[in-house]
Length: 145
Length: 145
DNA sequence: GCCATCAATGATATTGATTATCAATTATAT
DNA sequence: ATATAATTGATAATCAATATCATTGATGGC
Image (cartoon, rainbow over all chains, first blue to last red; front, side):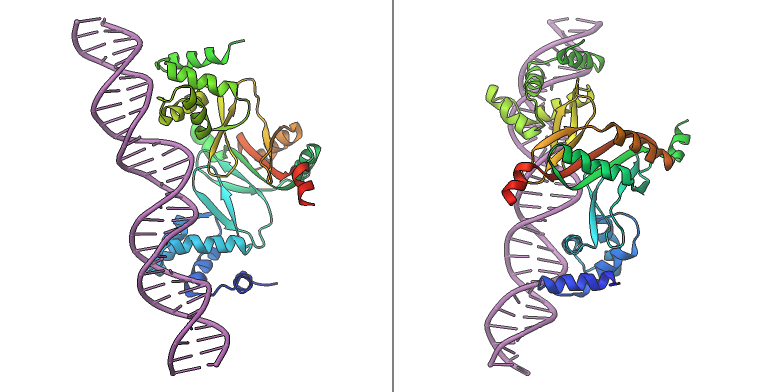
């Protein structure tokens, strides 16, 4: 089993790109975090370790990580792109609390199968999908009552 | 059965807002179109009828229509918000071709039910959801082959 | 080692959709 | 009428994301 680090380096070599301290550090920082993270948030953390890093580089490395299959873009519709781990994190959808933003990763194989069938029934071949479930978590419901 | 026009006017009155020629014209133009439309596209059409209208007004009226329950925002993830009819257009999801962008409205009651159950199984009360299915339509698949 | 080539970086400018501001205009209520 | 409040269009501002660009740094051929 290859490590994320190795995958990243393999991807760089394939693209004739170079490994650099900045890229390594940004990758490590991203990997250490478990939750979804925005480019801005990642930049803030990275800056603490090395204030000389520019945020353009953070954006660039995030794009590389997506291309390398290590990160996945998640769009909760609030105008900011978030990134989550992709490696060893198979596809899933998101259940987001409208109150506090707490997010749960969900996966329902029946839904997945039905999505494919719905697409096929219209002559489409499903390539991918996005599903965001929005609701109120228990805590937020109690607060309201 | 109230007309969209009446609903819009009722909403304006409720909010102590005023009916104006611009608002009426933009609403009519939106209602005449069946497909999803961006603010920019709507502005372009409206401009032909009355070149003096500013695009800020189009954005404003679109927001009013959403609030009045006549329009619904649709986000295909390409950075531009689209608007579709809401009145007499009950909830549905979208199946979008990655090749040509052709869009079909889809609805699967089993999926809808399962979404509710998934949310509940995590203690969430589902308020709404978004589901976008992306694929290749028949035409685009043939082109590829 | 030395030089030519090419990628990487950080700072900054730019983009593009959307929103806010504001002065001028128009409608409404008293 | 007159004071009040909403509307408009033009324009500026916002904000995330991207492009530009001069400088720096690495790599490979010799």
